[in-house]
Length: 410
Image (cartoon, rainbow, N blue to C red; front, side):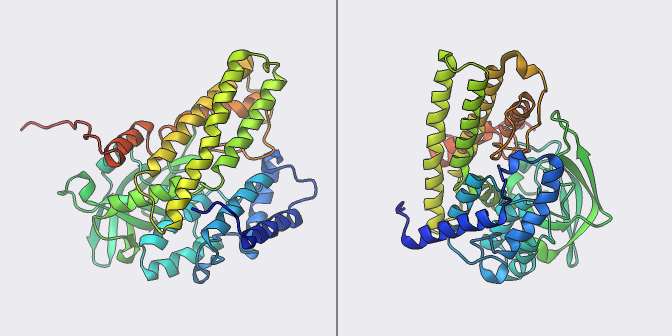
């Protein structure tokens, strides 16, 4: 991959910076500096601004509502928005539409599905959430029990999903369901797109230890979706799922380095504020964090190289998920060590992001870092646990023997 920016790319970067300067408020200090009420007011207006200026789905084809630009232009937009502390996906459900199901439909969907679903992701008419995990199928995803039975031109779905981020705001869900109960675990699954505004779908919020309701559980009772709303072939859902998870892990590859670099700088400010800058152990931990953040840059470049060659994400994407979640758990734990006894006191403004690093301008308070720490622990589980990622890398990337599976006796 050629890392030298050409003249057109530099011109485009200048255009993006000019857009941000023109459309953000004069006193802008970053999305994290806004109060919750200000964010609620800003986000939908900002989304309309992005939509009107072609900054949603930059790399999607124009016929589907995108800007029709290339991969490098998409990376430039991600980088400059992070630097400015401006959200590129302002609405909670946007990440599921633009980073997960949208790219999957582009890659594996039919022409009809692309024409029906992609423009409505861009417009915001369709708000998506993910329906994978179940009460008895989390890390063992392919052991799920939700059933889908063909009935004429429809699939009838019954079962339960859990841990749906932004599920309270969504009106569509992409769900994995068992369409062949007699097939082995991963062989009888299919990916379905279901409307949530129907009598057969019930959504219940889940309050987590952070005090928020960013997750929910979804119950299907004879829920209906048309046969044309299946992504991929019948019983090919496992492959579709891995493709989608690969897109999820590579979605922010162009901005991951900058996001984590900003967070580390914020942590360094916290060290100074707490008078811990001369502590040799703290300094050693910060040096470790700095070296790991630099590696994000090269992980991102590897992901971009694969995407630039036209390849869909493979099992190597597990490295990004494992690296990111394990790193963030350690840096969040370091913030608790820096705060010492103050880490037990929920003082100051709360964190802004539900998951991942905080945006520019976020408070450096005990309450904010507490929430970062709590969500960092969950990050080693959601989206595929660290243990599962290690198995995937060992077996599918390194070619090591499969981990022994339990056997049944009859």
